[in-house]
Length: 250
Image 1 (spheres, helix red, strand yellow):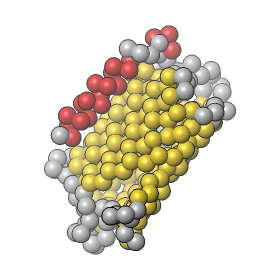
Image 2 (cartoon, rainbow, N blue to C red):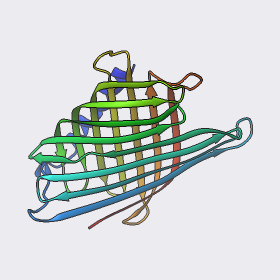
Image 3 (spheres, rainbow, N blue to C red):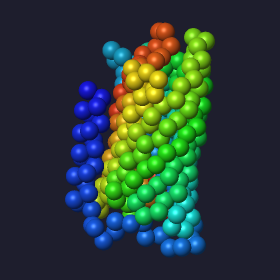
């Protein structure tokens, strides 16, 4: 099911290529210039009755690009949720993915840190690197790209286990803008190189309706699944939230 879902997203990304203008197939940033793009999103969900549920989530992204070859995206994701008065989500993910690009080719490095109450992860560190390919990218932020990294990670679980493994990390990224509507989706499939039965799959998709040049109403879908987790925890989780997003560039 995971593989069919991933390939469905890939087919959707390739379909978007037909909607994007060929004249802007390359990044048009000028040499010797620095571009900074910030975006932040705050979403939440609340329900009361049979199940009392509160969830707040935020995504923060800061991207530096220098000239026509260097980029540094910094990303933070945090979610906090309670259900029937008990802590459910306290999820933190930090990522830095510096890259070098020449035309459509990209070479990535990766550094990451993660905590997850849902899966009983007290601490996870990641380092890695690998190639990527941009089928399309432009200065409006529209993009269809894939990357394939090899990462080394150490995970400390709440039950006392420490797992060290190497993973293959495949990422599909799609971003599209049409007038006041924007859509973004990032999908990861990360099997262990030693045991393909040990894998992670995640997808974050966001649709936004612009209210002003910088402010938008956003709708977010977040799904995560991990085959290894602490006893008493759950391997998968799905959240649907609504809120606001803010973006600016200079």
